[in-house]
Image 1 (cartoon, helix red, strand yellow):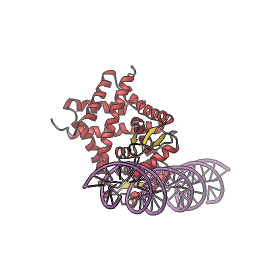
Image 2 (cartoon, each protein chain N blue to C red):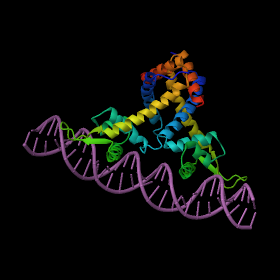
Image 3 (cartoon, each protein chain N blue to C red):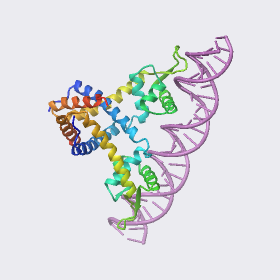
Image 4 (tube, helix red, strand yellow):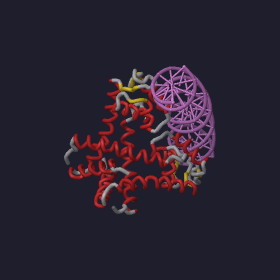
Length: 144
Length: 144
DNA sequence: CAAGATAGTACGAACTTCGTAATGTTCAAG
DNA sequence: CTTGAACATTACGAAGTTCGTACTATCTTG
């Protein structure tokens, strides 16, 4: 397989910069009232998708120190979005689950992502939409 | 023009999540030694691209408080990456320029973006590459 | 059962962000 | 001109975040 040309790389770099900026602004507008910082929001979404996960799991996934994750969980527990539980089979660990309220907030978060994706697709005509989805999947799932 | 279908939106949302995570990890690995936080890095790139810009310009562009931007500039000046200058025509303002060292760091930052874009393109075959570029540009430049 | 490995938490230092107040500059009236 | 309002930025301090070190509690293994 050939390499992408420098021109292609440069073109995509520039386009992707505008692309990213566009959706960063949109996201900032949506998250204005949210009151969750980036780490807490990502943590909550992960816990929502992985009920029973451990604090260490989330820390590894999000690439932060254990103590940082412990603090993030503290904040989410204080807001009643997440619950800590000592599992009987390994009482050193702490299993996390999202509360009902937490699940709602996860849904709002995901709705934000969905809105951004909808905005992307709206810019394209129907054939291009499927093409974009296909290419995004191909890039995301490529091993290397 | 029709709306994207809910299936399409859902599919892109999921794919884009994997896509984003993949490049976040790559970026984190690249920026490990960098020692610039996200705001400072974005600020430096903007100043590099817009020599003579004012602190207020950068603050508005990156959507942070003036005082926050002032602190970020402080850090960049201390690292000798950026210079403050009082322009004669409006001595209230502060014109910013990247130093030689700063320009080098900007180049490294951009090289990081370029590497990520190259990685995306590598996953595709030659025809798809141009298609991805075209679609990204179309989305980024769409008014709405 | 002792020693080491695991999983988390408490604490404190360093850093960031941002609101308020202060400083120096420019501009528009009068 | 002077005066007062608007402007661009900085100084300062409060609140919050991240993370390293040290500590607690709980398995696991020989």
